[in-house]
Length: 496
Image (cartoon, rainbow, N blue to C red; front, side, top):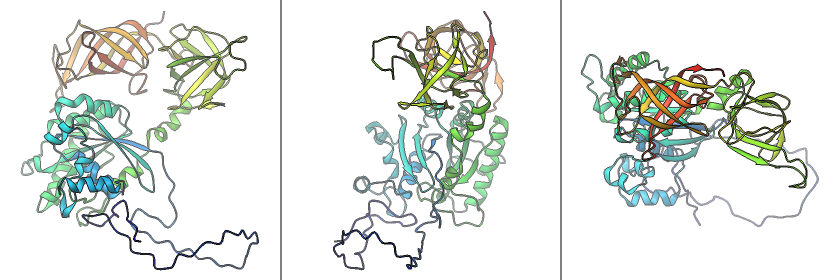
């Protein structure tokens, strides 16, 4: 009986699941008798053939999983691009493919509407837009990927910020059909600039610009060149170092996973570029060895891993993810806010004792003496956790009710909640010119620089040094709605 493949091979355009031909040999019963003798006279020759350009004669080393998001203006093709990546990397099961075909043809050469793979909400499919952040997973021979499909509409910018906060890379799409290519200098869309700027402010390590919908142009070469110049000019003004600017057609699949056959572009495909990007752990490996320890305490366990629970002394284990540096057995650590110093006598990770835990890993820390430490406190290298009550920060405002000086909010730093108020707004950033302008309030989706006063001290540090130690979320105390994101720029240390 013929076997049915679950996915479509790369490089083929078909409208139905591919049927594999019958095996060209007879299947005979297997002799299960074990023969323990080794015949060294056998000469075995292995012939390896590649079924697509991503195969290599020798299996390539797999890198760590890459978390990336797709961003850009509405209707730029973000959901279609993700669907194309899933389709061309064979990550769609047969029943999913059948369901897409049942909804009708939406792509080139009879392919289904690939945007439906990520637009799962009924409202999204009705309106043809992305509202919530959709996560998808796929893998190639070189690495695994976790994709966050962020909405492009201005109303849902807060969802884009949520997706960018934990991403290793951002793919910002640019719809070439929406731009005036005849202008002397191509002007990018405001939401394209906003998303790229937010990705930089949130310290997304790698930003890739994908110029989409090249299939809509009769001669895409001059159009891509003009958009590339505009992107390079904007990146220079915004302080962004693009990891790449690639032309793609998400609808047709050009240069997404299959190379673009054109004389005017000889660079990598989008998938090849993503396979080569280092993830956050690779980028922080060297810094983890030199940076001081910072670990927010998320949970305190009593008597974990001891014999005879409830008998004798029960050491406490302080669990949390290492935000910076590394924890080692024997090191001295200081608790915040108490300021007391102790030494690490044991480290636990995934139920086992270890000698060292590095940045980004969760660990349970056991100290040589009992301290009053609870959820929301911090452990760190002695002298590094300075109390801060005043700081300057970049505020990305996401609420429809404007941010005004003097109003009180709740802010969350790691696992601790404190009250805070905005003392003053120093300026607002003009998204189009990237220049500061005077402002006495920040409206929805606006970005500005503010001075904040905390009711209780926190161990803040610049966001440029730590994405965890320098980030806070702002919550409206009246309706408990997430209102904004604070990125610390200049903490003002206040030693007791």
